[in-house]
Image 1 (cartoon, helix red, strand yellow):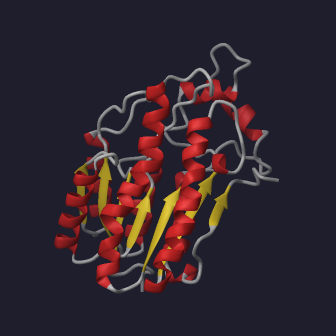
Image 2: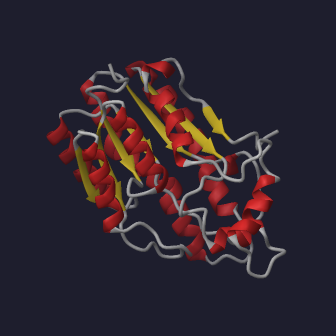
Length: 275
């Protein structure tokens, strides 16, 4: 039997990148999906954010796996929108077992030069947006009384400092203690809460000019090749960026019975970046 047969997962940032990969990997293991993404350009973000067409493609690929999916265009800063979407999804699919708080943005900027909007948007999306995601969804896991699992996408940046990422790193580090507190609060209901910490992942959030400049400030117009040259020096294993499915496979471990006694952990997938 598939490891997640009969279960339902709620995933934010599901239109592309890691979020789409998570939706497909969990669907391959039998889960039905509730998926949201902002599907419009997020202010301050220097690369194109997800579109309606991206989310529709996630729906198509999940349905091609013969799984059900309820999808909606919702900003994680919109608690009312998240609450309605999850409630509608649970009404249609019958339950909720798994929450993947995955949505996030990257806006590299020097700590003392970024404007207030850049700082605030980062915190609103990458930190407060996760709390709103959990506030809208986890009560449905509790109400189901069937146990459950929450995985919050943090980052290696919560552990390892890099210039130009103070707002991003602060948000991602904040998620760690949020998860640990929730892990204690939800343990009596046998609901597990963990953070996952990827190194650079080959998604649209990373593969763009702003990130290339962050990694290669010494080059006037850095290319992907320039970025990869620098990224290789951060990882012990000879890879500049891992793939979304590498994170999805780790998520699958955390949400399935394989990880049934794992909670409150910082699960690092970093190609040896901490070594």
